[in-house]
Length: 147
Image (cartoon, rainbow, N blue to C red; front, side, top):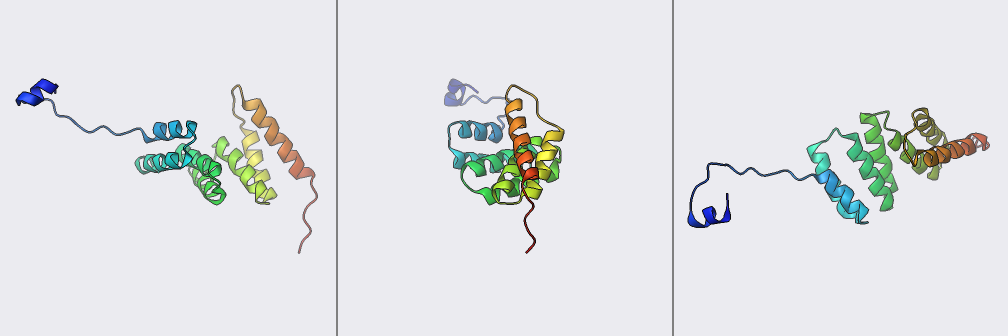
């Protein structure tokens, strides 16, 4: 309905319907700007609209990592992997968080899952080498002594 029709009271036969915001793209844009807390809010709204989308959970985990909320990041990676066990980015991300927490055995399992189906693309070789070197380091380190 044009401004003039609205101003002079002419009725339009078209019905305006509200449009849904694309919260996922909004969140990604906020992350690119470095506003991770606002991005998390948009991710939560995107998740409300698509509760079974593992990519949203994976992106939330990344944002939680960048805000220093590592336990939340691990929790969201696990939720994403529960929905899609082949989500290689989630395997990669959780592996390094778990390694940092001292859970080398589980980290190694996730690194193996990542390496079993490595991503493709221009930066993939860098991530694959990093995963391979980390896994090699875990496998070559002495097993902890039982308490």
